[in-house]
Length: 181
Image (cartoon, rainbow, N blue to C red; front, side, top):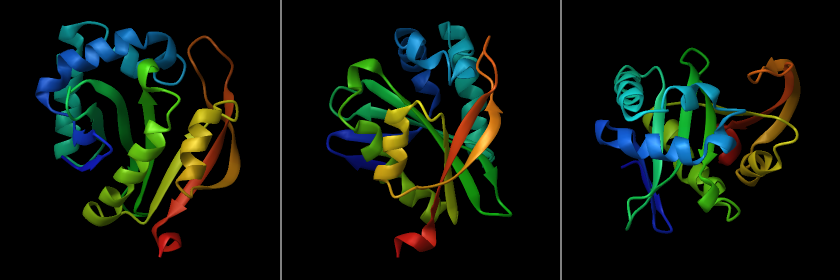
């Protein structure tokens, strides 16, 4: 376990999470389709989820990408996923990406989860910067960034192309470790 807060736990993904992630992805297919199409595609069946988890556990062990689960501590229900990805070890920077299940939305759960997870990258991985890349129309995700003291830095033109759509401009938010002192 990496962090706990308000009856929730953030933990590294593990092999026993495959079924929960498959269920989470299929239950939240509409929410994940636009910004997490690969996660959705790779978890449509329990077998695909098992392969996905094996790959993510290996990536975690190799420090190439970190996938965390956000679960209710008491019920063990999966509430969301948090990625720490696109790591640049030279620049000591990583990107946070996150999704929360529809039945846990609207209560700033992901804002609190990101707040609880931020120290992990700074202390355990020796990161100096986090980034969040978000579409300007995704007000919930922008709220996660701003409530955690991320600062908007610029617009990334045609940064992300959802399946079947034109490329979207995305907003870049950054948080530097030094700014928290």
